[in-house]
Image (cartoon, rainbow, N blue to C red):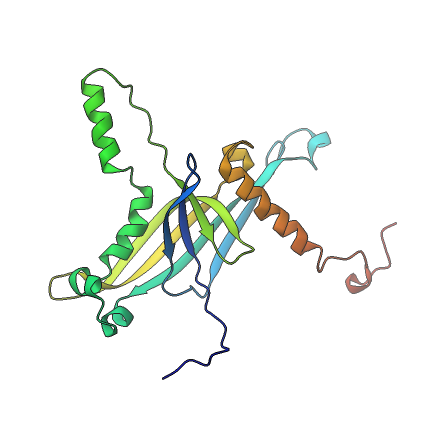
Length: 218
């Protein structure tokens, strides 16, 4: 079956890993199927928090809201198996799962190197800094994130017990300028994300009280 030549190209959501020092892309992980739902939660960063604080500060914000994303995605080897994909034939969808899992793993080579240096008394162990993780959901939504939880349910296996189908539950926390500081590469990406929201908000928001059933505020 042929595809209609003018049919729109399907855009996939996904994740990109960026090396901040060199500004190079290390890895791009496209979701095989876009999830039907994307849950976002925004918690305002108000001065004084909920239920307390100076009343004179009630309308002040300390920074951008704490924003989280939650999505459910699926991975299925069926399409690649029909195309005779050799990697799927050997490993199933284990490589796709591993690409997501290793986002939250420190590199094994760096762990080993730190361990060897610490045994020689040459290094004080510090947490490993990972690449900048970007969640990409269209051109209007490119945002730095930290993975907060990753749940994988494997549902089918080949005779060698390689996974063939899986459901992925992915939780992410947006990293704003409050988290990264203005000089970080990710902050520039975040500011573009916030400015895009501000631009979109002006397309529909107005100053007419008519739809609310009142003539104005006295």
